[in-house]
Image 1 (tube, rainbow, N blue to C red):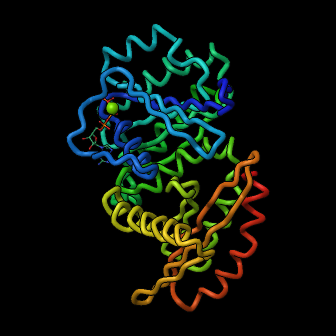
Image 2: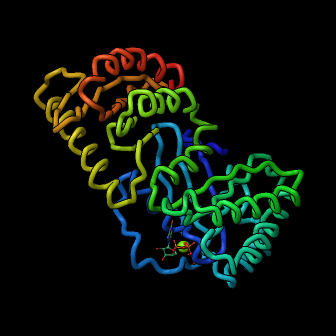
Length: 314
Ligand SMILES: Nc1nc2c(ncn2[C@@H]2O[C@H](COP(=O)(O)OP(=O)(O)OP(=O)(O)O)[C@@H](O)[C@H]2O)c(=O)[nH]1
Ligand SMILES: [Mg+2]
């Protein structure tokens, strides 16, 4: 991680893999959560490298390096290690649906690992078995393929730490989990994640999400898999509604810290939290959807969340 003159900490994520592995799609799915509206269809192969970056709270700038995977570009990168300087985390995507390319994919991975060895990269290398769509989740054939590649990579690189994920843009939370893994190491999201995860698993909430007043999602947990379209309908729209509501009451100078809405069997609840981070007051919201009968307990548990946020973000 490097620090620029404006004091925001720079965090560089490199996303690599063969052409057609789904790198750009995964990043678009991820960025949709950060309010960049783009479409995944009609994607063209990435020409060399696509850079994008976003600010995270007031403290971090996350830089994403999407390394176009066509052979002609791969040749350029492997002969110019400068592209990989100061990488905080490398994500390597393998298209789990394309068996014919496994060998090439592992070979390219090894070329990159050699570069990272020379650069003394010490973090985990994050491998995503991508296009592991929800319908293949329990498919023996897919599970075996992933196991086989995993064992191959592990056995040939005993000196490197790896972390493996199954990802698919048909399950946006699988992508966000993989990316949160590296962000967690700088943001201390573990405890926050654990609390939200508990809401989903223990109280059977449809979702539990922590986001900022610009709509940036910091931590999100869902009961069911969602693709980018469903995510936009069910989550992005809801978040925008919440943000509009809180802006409106702020304009009207009313102090309200939560809002409850009912529909059918479910309760939609959002609560506002204020946390001072490096002398700047940051607003966070927790949005939760659950069955009516769970809500008094959920609200009670949320009373302690302020101190969890303070402990981990401030
Ligand atoms: N089934 C399925 N298809 C996917 C998934 N992710 C991407 N795709 C499709 O795979 C194709 C390639 O996706 P891209 O994101 O352009 O691949 P890329 O790795 O960026 O390719 P290059 O830019 O050439 O390196 C597109 O047609 C996507 O719609 C996934 O999770 N599941
Ligand atoms: Mg691409």
